Each structure stands twice: as structure tokens, then as C-alpha cells.
Amino acid sequence: MEDRTRAYLRGRFRDYYRRSAPALPPDPAAREWGYIPWTSGPDTTMVRHRSQLDLGDLETFLARERPRHVYYSAGYYDDPSARTMADKGWRGSDLVFDIDADHLPNVDLGETTYAEMLAAGKESLERLVAILTDDFGFEDLSLAFSGGRGYHVHVRDESVHTLDREQRREIVEYVRGNGVDLESLLETEAVGGMGRKTPTSRRTLPTDGGWGRRAVDRIDTFVDELLAMDEADAIEYLEEFDRVGEKSATAVLNVVKGNTDQVRSGNVDVHPAFLPVARQLVQAAVEGEAAYIDEPVTTDTHRLIRLPGTLHGGSGLVVTPLEPGEVSSFDPLTDAIPDTFRGHDIAVEVAEETRLEFDGETRVVSPGRKVLPEYAGIFLMARGAAEKARE
Image 1 (tube, rainbow, N blue to C red):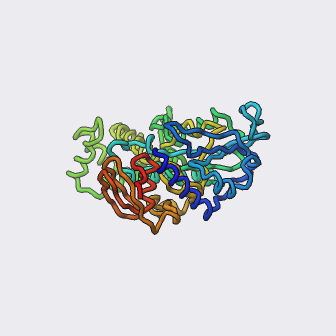
Image 2: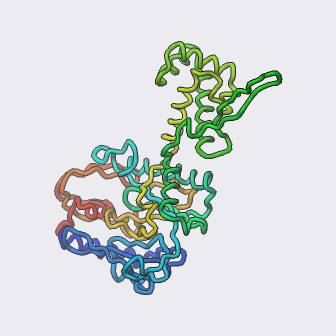
Image 3: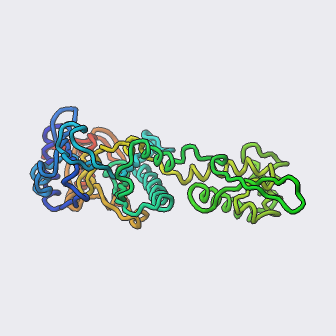
């Protein structure tokens, strides 16, 4: 990045911070703070092991230093400015989740557009919030668009503060659906009638919540789809499942039609032919409803995470706080554009052809000198894809 570009970005970040006041997280004095300044050279320098006292008033600090990135710790400490973790005196940590495009299935960083990445991340965020609230019963959640390629979730319920790394890893495994399959979910109960000498057993999926409930819901949808088809289409559909031929498909269709309530209730032993179908439906439920999160972020009790309301130095977008009910309507490529960067055009020297998707408009920018809306120019400069043009 050229000095002219760096100076321009630093100046405009200052203008943003003069007009903005990011909210402090709970108990800010007990947290470690860090930031990355606009230093020259190819490497970034993290300034960390700072306390709120070291920084002083946050608004004044941001307007003065105009940092490229701003972070605070998930952890709470007796002495957050101590140079080593052992000396900080750990009290506990929020439970933090990071959803990043790098870890999402079906995202190819060379092929998937930025807008498509963010859309995939938002879907995973909605699944994560559902699991955290429905399965774990967490209530104190703080959500944010990261300003880059994903989303953050902070769980601040007191029950999570003292969880160790291994306990946090178990939550990660559950959220990602790791190890969840038909056999892991099945519950076995003895069944039999009067006069039977040897009771038999029946295996069913639990319906009271969690992955079992999601699997049963997926089976319920499958039943609706199957019953809506004519027989020929239903047989053809069933033959698409692994290990299901025409004979097995016919058997499954007859079972679903004749034992609909049993199938909907999660009984997988209604017929042997139904078992491989049920197994694949459970797999589909996990793949469709798991949240793909970055495990090291959640298991690290000392992790620094971006401060909502600040700017992301790799995009110029706002690290935007969200309420759970706002996620579905949130458009990061419109709603995270700082007002400070709107209403102006700037000239930049674009290094290579780039696709931009902001404010519902897609433009392909070719190399050379280009005049763009300021937020688009800042985005390209912050990503290293353009330099500030000479006036």
C-alpha cells in the first residue's frame, strides 16, 4: 500500500470515528484491548495487552489513533494489561463464535462472489442462533457482521463464563453436528403385547428437541413430499437414495402410506427397507441445519474479537451489531456502508479487474484510473486492490 493511500484511509477513518461512538461491551475495564494501526510495510503490527485505562476514553482514542482494526477480549481479567496470560488473572470468558467464508461448505474463494459468501455466512448465522437459543437455552446473545467475510456471536450468559477449552469444544462439536447420525440419535424401547413371551424392541428418533427433533422434522417433510407424488414419481424419487432399488422403493412407499403416523413419529423400524432412507434423511438434516463455525475462536478463552461499531481495515465496512430478529433483512453490502463514506466520488488506480456488489448494484471495474463512490474506492484500497489516484 502506497503512503498516499494509507494516509487517505487513515484520514477518512478518523472522520468516521469523529461522527461515531461504538458501544462498549459489558465490563470493559476487565477486558484486554488491542488494535492494529496504519503502519507502513507488508506486515501488520498488533498492539495488545492494553486495558481500558490505557486507552482512555474510547471515542477520543479512536479519533486520535484512527486504527485500522480494533479488538477486545472475550476474557475477563484481574489485570488485563499484564503482558502474559498467566499474570492477567483470568476470571472467565464469553462464549464467542466466528462464522467465516473460509470455513463454509460450497464456498470457493476463487469462484464464489463476495456477496454469495456473505449470504452463505448469514444462513449459517441463522442456524447457529437457532441452535444456541433452542437447544442450549442461551438468552444473552450479541451478534455482529464482522465487516469482512462473516459474522460473530457472543454468548454472555453467566453459565458459560467458566467453561474450559474442552467444554467449549464439545459445544462446537454439537453446533457443527459432528458425530450426529441416525445411530447416535436413536432411542430403544421395549414393546410387546399380552401373551408374548419375548418382548421386542423399537427404535425411534427423539422428538423433544435437539438434533432428534430436526431429524424428525426432515422425515416429516420427506413424507409430505412423497405423498404428494404419483406412484411412478415416488418410486423414481426413492431410487435416488443410496442402496434403494425398485423393490426397496416400492416397500418404502407402501410403508409410508400404510404407517404414516409411525414414520412421522420417528419410528425407523417400521420396515427394514426404510432404515437406509432414514439414515440419509438424518444426514440431510445435519448438513442443512448445522452451523459452520471456526473452532479455534470458540475454544480460545483469551481470544480478541472485533469491536462492533468500529471499521474493518480490510474493507472499510462497519462491524455492525445486530439483533437476532434483524438478521434475515440485513444486507451487509448496503447496511454496513458507513454514512461518512456515502455521497462522494473518488479517483483510484485499480490494479486488476474486480467485481463490486454494493447497494444492490453490480459493477465490474477494469484496471486503470476509475472514479467510484467513495465507499467502493475505500473497499478496493483497503483490500489492496487499488491505490489512491493523484488528484
